[in-house]
Amino acid sequence: DTGVSQDPRHKITKRGQNVTFRCDPISEHNRLYWYRQTLGQGPEFLTYFQNEAQLEKSRLLSDRFSAERPKGSFSTLEIQRTEQGDSAMYLCASSLGHGLAGTGNTIYFGEGSWLTVV
Amino acid sequence: RKEVEQDPGPFNVPEGATVAFNCTYSNSASQSFFWYRQDCRKEPKLLMSVYSSGNEDGRFTAQLNRASQYISLLIRDSKLSDSATYLCVVNGVAGGTSYGKLTFGQGTILTVHP
Image (cartoon, rainbow over all chains, first blue to last red; front, side, top):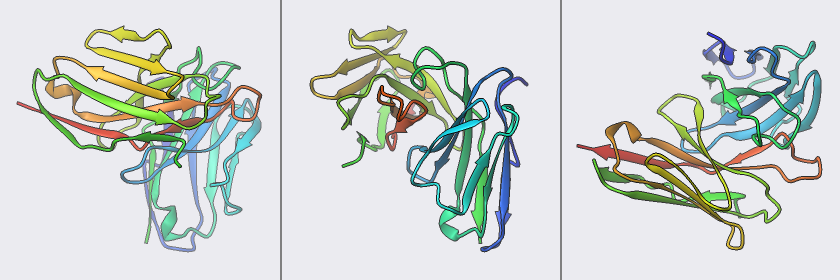
């Protein structure tokens, strides 16, 4: 499978615990994105990387959230001291290109990592 | 006001019906526009880009009205397999501040029944 891969697909954690999600983009895609989606809503932008550089972060990305893409390939999204409001699907996406997101370069999403905080 | 607004529906239509979805966006400087499709508990997938001149892909027609900041999607001859959530999507504003951001509407739920 050469699509965007996310791991784990499902995670149940207790409030206050830390969780980490991993995303492996499509090979050679220089851009990698993280989105969050809650029930009944569209995905919300969290952050994106161009190669290893994190170029934009949403205000949704509080101090408890951190994302890395150390070698410009896979990325991790860590949530510290999880809260019930963090329960959502975390979507990773990747694309190849340098222009505006989605323009001339299709953005491909992974199947998502579902987080439930109890 | 939300950046991208859609009628959430749900729309329940019989097979063969024509259904139209509407979407408005708030940032007049937005550059590119898309419709994504999302099946239940699955990832969003690009359905089609939307161009100012309007564009068609089989049974699907997308239109953009920049003056009104309005985007539409028309599905003709609906199939059972068209049942999904349709997401209106707008990308960032030229200038470097939002190159990575796609802004999604909340989605419109479509159910096509026999």
